[in-house]
Image (cartoon, rainbow, N blue to C red; front, side, top):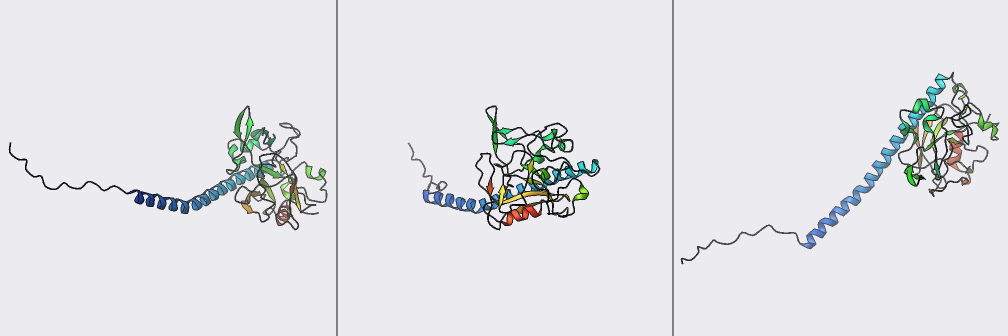
Amino acid sequence: MSPRPDSGPVAPGPRAFTLIELLVVVAIIAILAAMLLPSLSKAKVASQATECMSNNRQLGMAWLLYATDNNGNVVRNVPFNPDPLGPNGSWCDGWLEFGANLALLTKGKLGAYTARNVGIYKCPADIYTVPEGGVAHPRVRSNSMNAFIDSSGSSIGFGYPQYFCYRKLSDIIDPAPSDLFVMVDEHPDSINDAWLVVDPTTPTQWGNDLPASYHNGACGFNFSDGHSEIHHWVEPTTSARVTQVSHGGYPGSPNDHDIQWAVLHSTAHK
């Protein structure tokens, strides 16, 4: 048998990563991800705030259209949901808390103006659910209406006769339409009916109704001139921790700047 010819040196195969090199690559990826996460989080917060303002703006437009169609009379806005679907009902009937989710969004007096887009009743940052029928359901509403804006004058009966109650669009002079809020996102533990009152006689505590702070310590508002904005709170007591237990009685602080701002934008002393 003749000898097999020499095939020469064998070409080396592809070089594999060493364990150290792989660990270095993984570490670099982790560092890059850590650098990107805050930016992604800020982008998400900004996106939710933009959508929140859009939702509140659309609700505000529905509120304005209702008044225009009713000789300038604003929609009824009453507490406790005393007459759901009846003549003494409110702009949004139903009840909302962590034990119930009975809001009748399109059945209230503003429903004819919002029925095509019920998503505008909810802030996109509201991620909380309630049990119904043994299943967790997303809550359907995040917002309430300023108690001093009501064609029935319910705020007067709550002990505020010395403060303006705005029954018609033409009543909105003090504060000016651009400064009087109509819609507000309410704190998840505080929300129940669709009526939110900021007590102008006790500007050092919130009482039973507390605005939300869904957007990193800020809250969505719509104003009676139609514009919406995200207002940032400055007092730590305003951005109360969510316990997912319905309750009221929210404290403020001495010389509370947030409550003072809310009072100045909800009514005025006669």
